[in-house]
Length: 120
Image 1: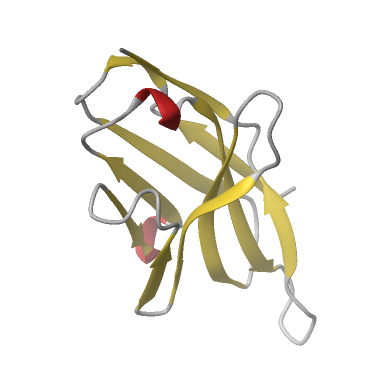
Image 2: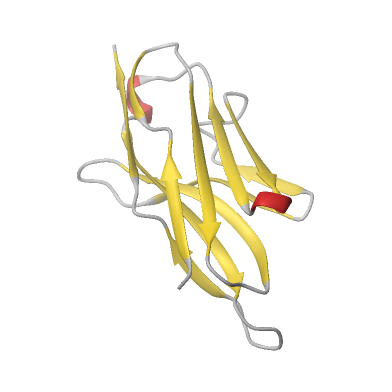
């Protein structure tokens, strides 16, 4: 069974840093795009950052502060978050487009979410 297991959330003061990790476990054929989303209370889930092949894209609100990276050998994606602001407070979700079996389309998988709280 494919699972995405996240770690690294927590409480940090404004201006601080956190690093999120998301590891894919289970038997798979390949991972296409991977990304991080977040959802703050009362708001819709939004894309924070994504990585596919050698390309990355970021939400305007995090450009220059967050960096997404990927370790293909370990099927893991990271989100380095620097200069955190109170408005970054949210539950962060890992997402991956995973091809479980060769010749079949990829399918979206989600992590369970990890809380990031930035205090002012």
